[in-house]
Image 1 (cartoon, rainbow, N blue to C red):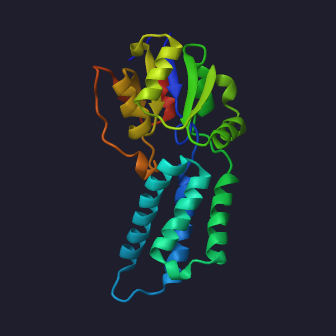
Image 2 (cartoon, rainbow, N blue to C red):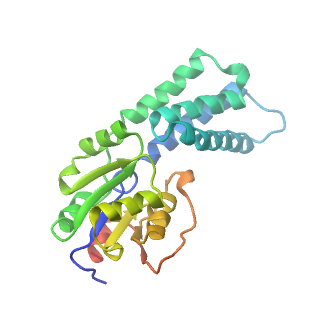
Length: 241
């Protein structure tokens, strides 16, 4: 299936162009192991149940902190600290705070690991379509990753937004001045990349990632008669665009 050669492709960054959430999951695994050791053996409580409780508290605190502080490493660090105090308030001390700071620092220092075929696919798409990078999160953190990735030159524009919702996609359409049917949002998140784009009248390409953040999971809702492709990998875009 070949698409028109004059589409506007809005492309997500984290977990679409490069790995991201895997680093947070590794931090959460380290946090959970540390907290389990701190709690010691809970009589009659299976280890899996303890780990599940810790993860539930992290997810709950992340949902709250997004509303308060938005996305980013700073928010993640605060969410972990609050989850720690939820689960083991008696053990909260300077050592626990330092442990969380070290986990956040490791994420900040992680290298940019591009998805297989990312560069080759952008090289193929760039002469054929208008490419825009659209990512959400902390402005400095996201632009820093874009710069370190070496991919910025393939994009006509780079936009970092606080949230990806229907209003943001409608704003993008108004700014671009092109028919919605010629615009495609490409990403791994049903909640941020697919559903709000479809609701705003864009088409979408869903590229699932095995480590997509749990807060980005959602059922895809087709609407406005728009198309939603599901591809296995970013490089598959060359078969459709």
